[in-house]
Length: 134
Figure 1 (tube, rainbow, N blue to C red):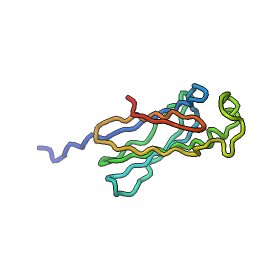
Figure 2 (cartoon, rainbow, N blue to C red):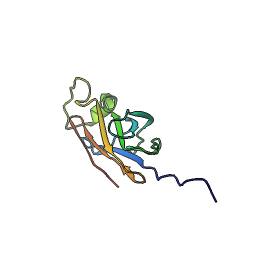
Figure 3 (spheres, helix red, strand yellow):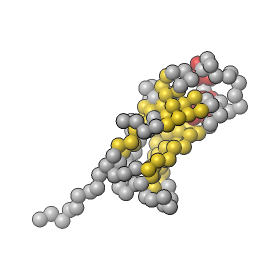
Figure 4 (cartoon, helix red, strand yellow):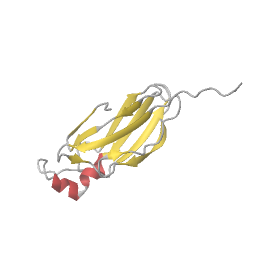
């Protein structure tokens, strides 16, 4: 008879970013991941990554067992401050104070054990939208 108990299934997270101002993936955006166990618990930084040429971040750290809330922090200012990106935005104003109205985007959402959460970010210099993808 085994004394091991079955571990509860863990949740996982993935994301991608589409720059809607140019209709292309947003490459090189740094993303950090944090988690907590319950609404009153402290956030624990788990690490991060950056988007690839397809705007995807495929190597975010695993969520710890017992995670109930997740926060994705997207560092958008450096992306929009990049001269190459700014020139490609034909419909956006050419002059901006910091390169983006939203220098960072923080998305917080609840999770349940065993489910995968794909949370895409639709981004432009003056707005953003997120949703739960598949």
